[in-house]
Amino acid sequence: MSQEKTGKVSGDSPEKKPGQVERLMKKWGIPLAIAVFLFLLLMPTPEGLGLSAQRSLAVFTAALILWVTTPIPIYLTSMLAILLLPLIGAVKDQKDAFGMLGNDVIWLMVSAFVLTSAIVKSQLGRRFALWMITKFGKTPKMTLFTLIVINFVLAFFVPSTTARATLMVPICLILLEVYKAIPGESNLGRVMMLQGLQADALATSGVMTATAGNIIAVGFINSQAGGNIGYMQWLLASMPTAIITMIIVFFLGLKIFSIKDEFNFEKAIGTLEEELRKLGSFSLAEKKAMVIFLLTVVLWATGDYHKHWVGYEISTEQTAVLAALLCLLPKLGLLTWKEANIKWDLMIFAAGAYAVGGALDKSKGAEWLITQLVNGLGLQNMSHFWVYVIVVFISMYSHLIFTSKTVRVTILIPAFITLAKTLGMNPVALALASAMTMTYTITLPPHSKVNTLYFGTGYFSVLDQVKYAVVTCFVGAVIISLAIFTWFKIIGIA
Image 1: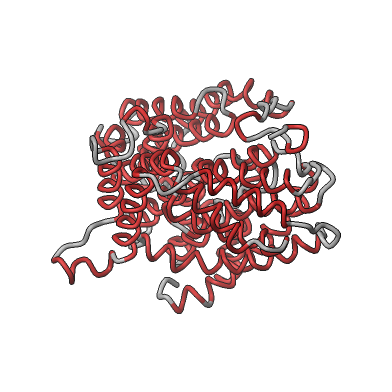
Image 2: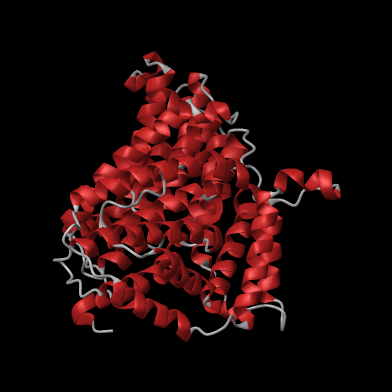
C-alpha cells in the first residue's frame, strides 16, 4: 500500500511536538504543585473542613495539577499520592491508600487488556470487519454506515479504543486506496475517517467495558453514590443515546462533507473481498477467541439471572477474569503472559486516583468543596433541570482541557456525585449522565490516541475535525440531557 495515496498508517504517524502552552505546563507543573500542596497543607483549617480533609485536599490538588500538566508520568504522580496520604495523616489506615491496587475494578481493567490482546492476535476482529463491508457496503453511504456498525459491534468484543482503531484504519485505507481517494481532497476520505473516530468514541460510550474510563466511573458511582450499575445497566442507559447521536451526526456529516460526486465502489469491494479470502478458513485461534468472547458476552448479558439459574451471581469482574484466564491457559488459550499487553502504568494511575478520590470523599473534603462551589455559583438557586443540563455540557466539553479520559473521570465524577448529594438530587443519575460523555474526546488530534491514528492518514485537517466534532458534541449533550428526564425514568435510574 503506497503511503503517497493513503497517508501514514497507524503505526507510522509522527509524534506530535508539544506546543508552547504544553511546554509551559510541563515546566511549571512541579513548582505549582508543590506551592499549592504546601499552601493547602499549612493554611489555617477553614471552618467546616476537618484536618484530615484538608490534608486529603492538599494531596488531591497537587496530584491533579501534576496529572494535568504531566511534568512526570501520571503513574508516578499516583505513586507519590499513595505514599503521601498515610504519611501526612490524610488517611488513618494505610490500606486505604496502598490497598487500592487490589480493587476489583483494577482486576477488571487487567482482564480487559488481556481480552484485547487475544482478539487482536487471533485476527477475529479483522475478519469480521472485512466480512461486514463486503456483505453490506455496496454504495458509498452504505459503506460509511457499515463501518459505523462495525465500530459499534467491535466495542462489545474489543475493550480498547486504540485496538479498535488499529483494526479499522487499515481497512479504511485499503478501501480509499482502491477508490483512488486523494488525502486532503476527497470528501469521502474526510467523512470516512472522521466518522470512524467518532463512531469509536460513541460506541465506547455505550459499552461499560469498552474503555477503562467507563469502568473507573462505575467504581465511583457504585461506591460513592450508592449505585448498582453493572454491565447491562450501563448498556441499557447509554447505548440508546449513543446510537441516536451517531445516526443524527451520520447524516449531518454527509451534509458537511458532501460525497455526491464520489462513486464507483465496485473495484474497492473486489479488493476487500480478496483481503478476506487471504485470511482463509477460520483458524483455531479465531475459533477459540469466538468461544471465549461469546461466553463472556453471554455471562455479562445474563448477570441478573445468574442467581435464579445457578444460585449465585457471577459478577462483571469475575466474568472478565474468567475470560482472561481462558485466554492465557497453556495449550487451551490464545496467548502467553508476555503477549498480554497489560498497561500497568494505567493500573497504578487508577489505584492512585481511587486512593486520593476515596480519601477526599471519606474525609468529607469533597463535600466541603462542592458546598463552596454551590454557594459561589449560586447553583443551589437553580432548578434541578438546569443543574443536570449544565453538568452534562461541562462534562462533554471538558476534554478540551483534560486530554485523558481517566483523569477527567477521576476529577469530575466524584465531584458531581458530591454536588448531587449537596443539592438533594439523584447522584447516580447525574454521575452516570456525566460519565456517558467522557468518551467524546473527538475535537482535536491530541485528545486521544484514536484521533491521532485517524489523523495520521492525512484525509482530514484539524479544522475539519473541529468543525464536525463541535456539532457532534452538542448533539450528544442534548440527547443525553433529554435521556435524563425521559429514558432514565423509564428504566428506573432517575
